Image (tube, rainbow, N blue to C red; front, side, top):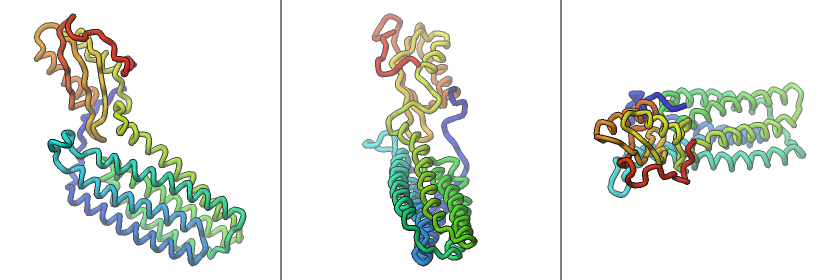
Length: 305
């Protein structure tokens, strides 16, 4: 079904204040990563090091998102006529691709340790994982509001919630080692963490690829737009429809519209419908008279549905 909301979202957060929150989240994640790596080496816990690497990837993703936020706010110019908004989409693509690589590495490491589980200091694992859980929750609080309006920050927010979950898993593993000395729990949790990261990265990667591949906005189809516009009085036919997302918040369409009679008032109604019903504020329309131009021609690149 088509979107009913306006394409522009305003949560009234000053950009500089938002940047400060992201910078704070980066700082606490880097501190956490260092603490977890040291603790993992001292304790011999691969699961703790796995969680540290995941946290490092979150810190790096926040660094990339921080830079992308700055670039995205640059005004459009003669060379970048749509502006720089897609910088954040590109950053998200980099972040998720990196997460996939990390998850594959952690899976392989966990499998290898199944056959040779190391000695692990359970108390060290539990203490540092509790610290990790606290930092994950602080980071989530810093980025929650920003996550509503940014694909990059939303991804980082979701990753930190995932980190909180993996920290709980590591705490569980440490308790099991302390109580029963069952060392296989550590590589098993490492494998579980890696599979969860992989699943999450692949799921979040889909909308990013959709934007970069000039896909139509989720839930909007060319055929739906054609049918809606052809319901406007004076519009006889709509064809050669191309839909895409300029960036996360701006949708665009170009189309040929066959209009009988005076075009100006009909175009006003067409643009209003596109904006209000489909959340498309940027439209490029070529007006054709009945029987002229390419009226009625099918566009093989865009199926009717």
